[in-house]
Amino acid sequence: MSNRFEKLPVKIYEDNARASSAVAARIADLIRRRSAEGKKAVLGLATGHTPINVYRELIRLHKNEGLDFSNVITFNLDEYWPIQPDAFQSYHRWMNENFFGHVNIPKGEINIPAGTVGPDKVESFCRQYEENIRRCGGIDFQILGIGRTGHIGFNEPGSGRESRTRLVYLDAVTRKDAAGDFFGEENVPAQAISMGVGSILEGREIALLAFGEHKAPIVQRAIEGEISSSVAATFLQSHPACTFYLDEAAAACLARMATPWLLGSCVWDELLERKAVIWLSQKLSRPILKLTDEDYAENGLAELIHNRRGCYQLNIDAFKRLMNTITGWPGGKEKPKKVLILSPHPDDDVICMAGTMSRFVKQGHEVHVAYMVSGFLSVFDYDVDRFADFVRQFNDIFGLTPKQTRSIEEHIEKFLRNKSPGDIDSPEVQAVKILIRRTEAVAAAKFCGVSEANCHFLNMPFYNTGKVQKLPIVRQDVHAVEKILDEVKPDIIFAAGDMSDPHGTHRMCLAAAMQALEQYNKSAARKPELWLYRGAWQEWPVEQIDMAVPLAPDELSQKRRAIFRHQSQKDTAMFPGPYDNREFWQRAEDRNMASAKLYDTLGLPEYHAIEAFARWPIKRSADSRKQLLS
Image (cartoon, rainbow, N blue to C red; front, side, top):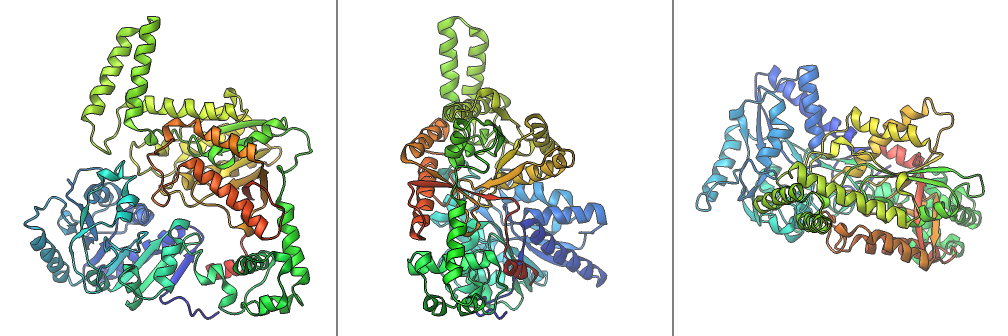
């Protein structure tokens, strides 16, 4: 299939692990070739959540397969300014903790922009940084991520094609994106030192990585849009050896994935047919059953109606399939079931499926909720101070352990007074934050009818770093899920299946759940059904929805009140995500009502709101599989 839309090479993988391994393999091959030639390999490196799996794979190759980094020179793209190198958010510290500290790159060959250089010396430092790159013969392989503004490095909108390493002001969107790492937008530095677009384009080979649905719109613009200084990543279209490495989610808006019929002949199956019908219905703002042969032919779908000998049965099939998704829940007329809801954070259950959860309880099913991580990072310090004061006064009223209570409160007050943004909380402060999230979770679940005894807290270890950056999933994380599966023995499982969680907790929880479920199914008398819901960030594409649970106005109102039980996340959340200023209850309501509106515009029954689910395994069209193989 020819692709007139994509203006540079793109490789799409099933997940970010495969994409990261592919990039790591390219780098390993370069290092070995340069070593065999007796030369240095010069790498341009990026930081953050996107490239971390590349570094982890390179570390594995070093430790397990003897990949030698002694001939490597590195130059990092950027660093916040001003910032101390030992600050938690510093790229110096991040690189040491996540890469340099685990491989044998000579310390003198590691180059990172300095966040401590004085304002009167920044310009000369940047010139020297450029000179150091030239002295090493230029960068052989450059790793990039992409920001929501389309920035590469910290080259914000307006950065020129010829720009060099310099001190830049960060765009408001970029600062908002970084707010989670700094525990508040007000703590994000206003400036950074960054290699320029021109500096980046001089690299002999470039690999840009992008993962997750939230990157899909800007990725599409960078690959298929016109070159413009308003999106610095579009300048990569002019590079002779730049490749984008994407997971399916980040590639979702590309023409080859979103509308492959516009590129040429497709591998048509039921899912792709349904996707095309829904796309056409939305494009023309016309119900499915009112679409005509002419509508299809005039919008690039002549092949489809030719294959189906007209659109009459095609429309009916798509309509019936969507009608069949509308239900209270699967198997509702059977005997009571055991239902296990895996909630990554302590509020994901009610944000994403409070209506369905309440309906299960009302129908007499045994509902359990397992909260996978503690969520203490999302609690503000002032809430800890407030609750500590409440406990002290409560104990004073009833004469309960006043000495111990005052001692703990004094510790908390002193610690919080001297705490800098991003500092890891003391065990006492962490314990209070965990308790706040737990009591809120129980209150919300009870409001939906779930008993406190059926609320389980797994406290998975990968989360407990005290920092935004999480550890890799290990055996203990999987075991925590296995344990609750063995205890509950569920008939039906609900898990978070979204890829848009900005800090990856949902993705990691799902990975652990899948590993645990694979092990559990080996000995289970009956394999449980697995249904996936989306988190607060995005909804399932309508063609992938397998179950749509309608909610009446009073049910949606009840869902809102359940979300309100999470008071520490009300009004202002610690990690709301950089893409949406609405509160979580507003996102939930708007999304559920938008799903109902979409069903209505497609010509289906009109409901007030809908909670949507997809059944595992998630269906992929034959054409999508072809795109992955290409």
